[in-house]
Length: 244
Image (cartoon, rainbow, N blue to C red; front, side, top):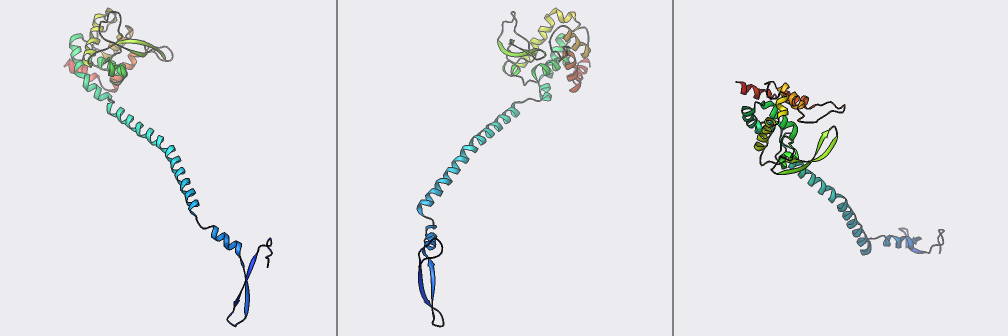
C-alpha cells in the first residue's frame, strides 16, 4: 500500500481489539527511520567537540592580550604611585638646604623651594631624577662637570634640546644654584640680594632673565608662578623662621 504523501511505502499490521475484531494500523517506516538517524553518533560528538575547542581557542586569543595589557598597566601605575613624590614631601626633603643657602647668600628659603618645585615638578621630572638637577641649570662652556641632554621648553610651546648640569645629589644641585646666582652680576644688578621680600626677589629673578617662561600672549610669567607657589604652600613661613 502507498500513503498519500509522495507515495511513501507503508506497511499494514493486523491487531486484535478487546472484542476480538481485527483492525489495521499503518506505520510510516521512513519517519521511524528518521528518529533513529537523529540519535547522536560518535561522528556528531566529535564535530561538537571540535566546535567547542575552536570557541575556547577564539576566546583565549581575544581575552589573553587584554588581560596582559591590563595587568602590565596596573603594574606601571603602581610603580608610578610608589615613585611619585608629593609636593609636601618634596618640601620637607629640601627645606633644610634652602635655609642653609639663605645664611650664605640671603636668597629667601621660600624662593629657593618655589624655584625647585617649579623647575623640577617637585622632584618628579626626568632631569631631577636622572641628573639631580632641580633648577634646570644648563651646562655652559664654563661647566666642567657631568652633563645630561634633555628637551626643554624655552618659550611658549617652543621646545629645544639642550645640555644640563648633572649632580650627584639634590644637595649639590641647591648649592650650585646659590653659587650661580651669587657669581653672576646680573642678579645683583637686578636687586636680588637687596630685598627680603619674596615677591620682589621673584621679580628680580625674572628681570635678570633666569627663565624665559611666557604665556600665550608673550608675557613673562616666571615671577607670578613663583609667587603663587609660595602662597599655595605657605612657603613664607620658612622666611619668618630665618628672621626670628
